[in-house]
Image 1 (tube, rainbow, N blue to C red):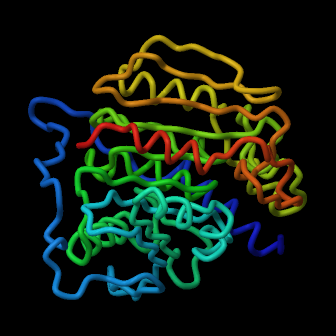
Image 2: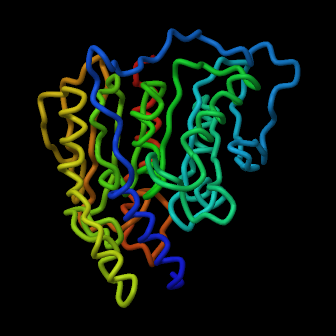
Image 3: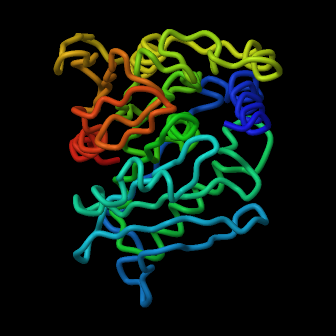
Amino acid sequence: MPTRAALLLAALLLAARCGGAPPPPASPQNPAPQASAARAGSSGCQAARPLEPGTHRLRSGGLERRFLLSLPSGDGPHPVLLDLHGLGSSAAQQAAYGRLPEQGSRRGYIVATPQAAEGRLGWTLPHTSGPDDTAFLTALLDHLERGLCVQDRREFAAGLSYGAAMATALVCELDGRLSGVAAVAGLNIVRPCERRPPPTTVVAFHGTADRIVPYRGGHPFQDATGELRTLADLVVLDPVEDAAAGWADLFECAGRATGTLSAGIRVRDWKSCPGGTTLRLYTIDGGGHTWPGPIEVPWLGATARDLDATRLILDAFDRAPSR
């Protein structure tokens, strides 16, 4: 990774941990917003010219933004999935690596894979400076609802690394709009919010040998030297298991249990989450900063090729209760 890019990545991680104040906790005088009643199908079910698969552009915050769109067959309404790339990556790379557009559309999902703003390596997390990506992703969901037959009570987000951080941040920032999120190699970048959102399905994957976003917490970019090491030492991440427990506390999930899926893969589940939601953490012993599945990226560490994160994410989203 080029030094300048790596420094910018560390700076973004620092912003994620030290950004602006979180929203205030809910109270009778300051209640947490609730998701409004939604229709089974969006207004786009009657669109005269529905959106087509391919590359699209959408203006948000005075910027022209780009996203890739993959569509299922059939009239719908269909659930929607936002697929968020990691730092220094791109929408095209994320689509190929995570395979959510291909596999999701086969399952009946509308999959939008957006690109971070031009000139930016990654997303602007809530309460940090930069293009308002929360507003952009909200506008993107609204755009899809107007232009396609969307099952608008079943909207989801998934991401890798910093994309995982953005996906989990949306649980709170979209005021319960999302039915579920998936975080690959990034659950511990953003802490659960103080304001209590509606219970949401959360499924996460993380390798114990991740050297960029360490499983046991502490400083990111563990192999960094020089300026990057100095900057990374300003960031302290929570252990992934603590992050999962924080979401369990926020959602009031109970009945934590840990089992073994296969050799080297542990699954931590909370058996009782409100509203039939799921909270699950897959721990890959020796796994790197990678997306479990058939594609290997050697410089990011070992990949659990016998664990298909894409399939498991879609399985969890299929079971997630509608809003």
